[in-house]
Length: 222
Ligand code: CA
Image (tube, rainbow, N blue to C red):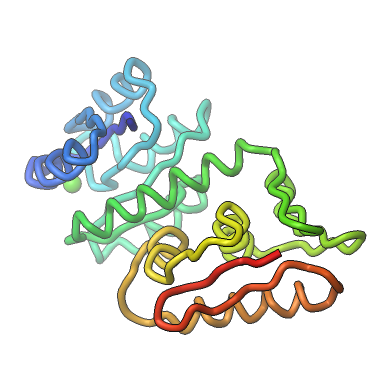
C-alpha cells in the first residue's frame, strides 16, 4: 500500500485519482494549496507527491523547493501545457517526472509505478545475480565475470526486470509500462535497448542470453 499526497486546486483531478488509487489499495491525501500541502507533507510523510504547479498563493515551484530542501521523496509535477519553462525549472529543482494536463489517470498511474520503482531501486544497493552476471543496483553496473559495463538507466531497468525473473518470460507490455510508463504505441525503442544489452552480454563467453518469445516478450536464460 502506498501513501500518496496530491497538492492540486482542481477537485476533479483529485476525485478521479482517488477512485483509481483506492481500487489498487492505496491511500490519497489531498491539499488544495501549497501551504496546506506542506503541512500535510510533514504530517502524512507520503511515499510520493503529485504536485500541481499552478496553485493559489504559494506556487508549486516554491512548494517543490521546500520539499526538496529536506526530502528525496518522488515528486511528479502536474502542469498546464503552456508552462513549459515551469516544467524545466521543476525538473531542475528535482522533480522526478511531469505530466501535462489534461492527462489520463491511466497514464498517471503508470508514471506513479515507474517513479516508485525507481526510487526503490535507488535505495537498494544489493546485487542481482544470474549465472556469471551480477547487476549492481547501487552503481547501475552490469558485471560479467571480470568485465564491467556502466548501464544507461533504461538498459539498467530492463536488465533489472529480466534478472529479477530468470528463466521466465517477461512480456513486452509489462516492460514498456514499467520502464517507459506506457504499453501502447511505438515499441521500437524496447527492441533497440534489448539489442544493446545483447551486444554487451555477447562480449563475455558464458553470459546469460536474452531469448525473444515472438509476440510475447523476453526471457533471460543462464
Ligand atoms: Ca491548478
